[in-house]
Image (tube, rainbow, N blue to C red; front, side, top):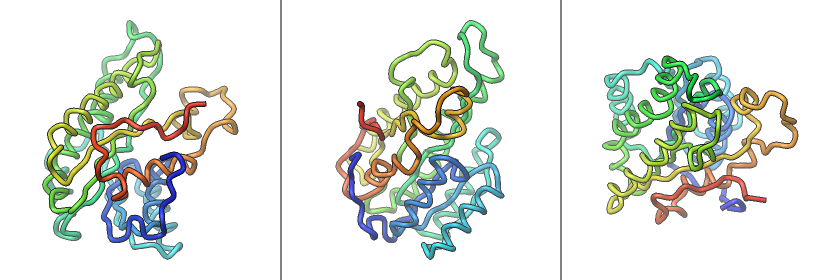
Amino acid sequence: MYTYQATENTLKDKVILITGAGDGIGRVAAITYAKHGATVILLGKTTNKLECVYDEIVNAGYPQPAIVPMDLKGATKQNYRDLAATIESQFGRLDGLLNNAGILGSLGPLEHFCSSTFENVIKVNVTAQAMITKALFPVMRKSKSASVVFTSSGVGRKGREFWGPYAISKFAVEGMMQTWACEVEKTPIRVNCINPGATRTSMRASAFPGEDRDLLATPEDLMPTYLYLMSDDSKNINGQSLDAQSKK
C-alpha cells in the first residue's frame, strides 16, 4: 500500500470524519480525502486551524467540508451523541472515521510520570477515541462499506524506555482496534490501525527537538496508506496494523 495509486474518484461521495484535522497528518489527510472526492468533517480543538483547512479545501474546488470544534480532553458522552445525531441528520451516514487526534504528554521514566499528564494522555488517546467510535458506529452501519482507522505508533507495538503514558496509550489503541475488528467481522464496517512512523510533525519535533526534520517523511508521503484504508479497495482488510512507511 506504500505505492497505492488512488484515482481521482476513489472516495467520491464518501463522508469521512477526521479528528485532529487542523494540523499535521490530520490536516493533510482531510485535504487528500477531499481531493479524491470525499466530503470531510473536520474535527479539532482549534477553530481557526480548522477554518484554514476548510478554506484550502473549498478554494481547491473540492466538496464542501464541515467543521466540528471539539476538545477531546473535555468532551462528554452527550457531545459524542450530538455529533452522531448531527452527522446522521445532515449526511444520512458516515463512511469513514480517522481517529488521528492525540497528545504526546511528557517523556521520561515511568517511575516519575505525573498522574495528571497520564490521565490526560489516556483520555485523549484512548478514552475519547473509544467514545467517539462507539457513538458513531450506528451512523456507520448505514454505510455500505465503512472504515475506522486508529492511529498507532511503533512504541505501541514494542515497549521503549521513557515513552511512558504515550506508549501505554498506543498499546491500548492496538488492543482496542483488534477487539473491535473481531466484533465487526461480519458487518460492513472494518477497523484497522496505521503506524505513521517518523514523520515531520509538531509532535515529532517535541519528542526529538534536535532531529533534522528534513530527513523525515512528510505527512503527504504517508497518504497512499491513508487513502487505501478509506477506499473500497481495502474492504476486505480488517484487524490489521499497517505501516505507512516501508521499513528500510
